[in-house]
Image 1 (tube, rainbow, N blue to C red):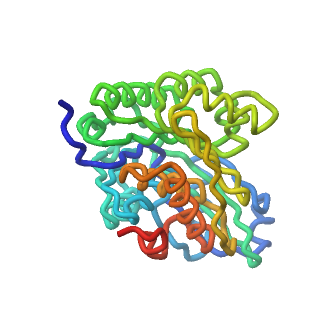
Image 2: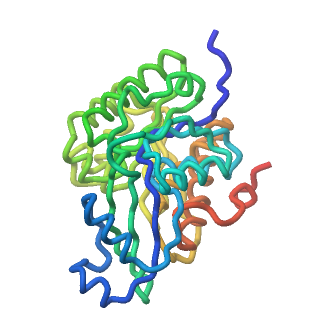
Length: 328
């Protein structure tokens, strides 16, 4: 008989520190930065831009890590695996997770690239320009898997962004095998339509053969199945996945569970910053799922968590999520 899980959710993903600072438009123009865009930068530019930025707010980020933070805020027992370097930002990342009660056993890398960071410049009108250096986090591989943590988690949650590097893809396959062998569930978020497009066959195989609970927004699920309409994508998901939550911004979300379809409205919110909305939705959904709540209620928890996140700057909760969802 399988032992009872000691973790509800174990996230595996990119370990990134967000560094947010205000910047005048002249600062962006001087450096040839495209206002509102997100781009990847190299080590040298990351160091130069970090040094040139004004006073910044540094906090743990990364898609799956944000999901873990919000799930912990909802009362779930949560762990996270992701690679940082043994440097100042690596310690910021670890501190922020551990401070909210997330088990984080991955040891920092003693050599190689520094900790990943997203250097976010906020213009006077609130527009965000994101410059992301992936650094140490893309070095995550099978050797970094904490197999005991995977076996002990009711749900292992995998971040699609980390599917890009081959070593991480191999780690995902291994983690899914360990989880399934232990009688646990495997969940995946597709993260990005372009990432899905680059690895469509591998994603399709992973979703079909190894995924119990799938998260995707409309663009991502259309990319996964190479179809033109949401209705077609929904039918494809129903045929392949036991549980899926498909988010559609202000149109709410569609939850598929054992072939049944549930339509969940979006929660009303004043939109300040949409960063992390999908991460928070997954957190709410999974926190409700591990409590055994019905499918539509899982979707409602996801919508409530997403509404809280988009109501302020930053991708981690600032209000009492348990109170907002009405959790006892």
